Amino acid sequence: METTKKTEPILPPKGLNSRLRLIAVLFIEASLGKGIRLAKKWKRSIKLPLMIEPQNVLGIPSGVLFQGRVLASKTIRQPKVGDSAWANLAGMLQYWMTDEEPYAKVEAVCGGVSKETEADEEGYFELIFDHAAALVAKKIKIRLPDLAPEKWQEVPVASIPENDVESVIVCDIDDTVMETNVESVFKLFKTMFLGNVLTRRVFPGMADFFQNVAKEGNLVFFVTSSPWNLRSFIQSVFERHQIPLGGIFMTDWGLDTEKWFCKAHDVHKTEAIERILEWYPTKKVL
Image (cartoon, rainbow, N blue to C red; front, side):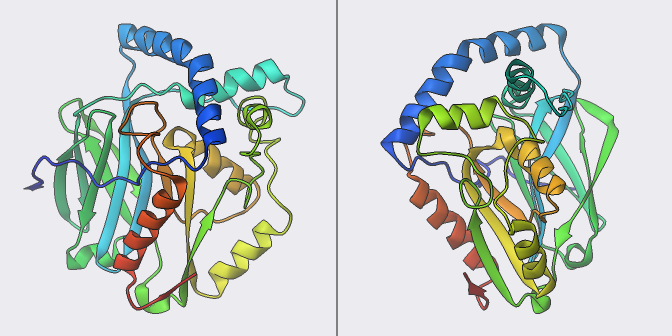
């Protein structure tokens, strides 16, 4: 088994694209921060089982990229048609109130090779398998060797062989694929917290467009300034509207200098595109 040296994982960058977005973040953090901290304290007091939340499990030309986060297990309330705003708020808070496990050891097996790494202080980690067998791997097995050694998860690898890729498309999500209303604090809050998977609107034609893009041999990466807490929410919305979700670059929301005050949305996008270009240097990126 190969053990990786403890380093800071290379995670999708973080960003802020306007003063209005900063105001929105401040408003959301001020409104929810205390409740989230209390919920985390309560969760830690009862020590919920831990889980590994996969974020990207992608076949890239050199092998397989595996990004994820170690969190306390939770059950997301399933929305219903006609749910009230209060019911939707309670449901959306379940996505936001994550209880991460810092510095947890993670083991993954891909193509017969086992690797270990350590999550960072927010529970994030990254592994890259660059051996020959990883190029054709269909799944990864993962576990927490110190905290839950008997519990293995299997995660499928989303990949398209490099020779079959016609071009690579990089697409935003907020107000491009899904209606988010990022230019209005009130509308942003209403959209993000008072709706649910069933009410979140996707712009007309998006499903047909991305399905056709995939059929034509194009690879799609989504880049958004939405936080990783909403990864499973976005996936559920995409699945409902039959939009294939490729690789995704998201952010870690917060108010410290390492997060929202650090990089603008355009920098976040630029760094994501630069990394994609490293993976596909001979392909056209749109």
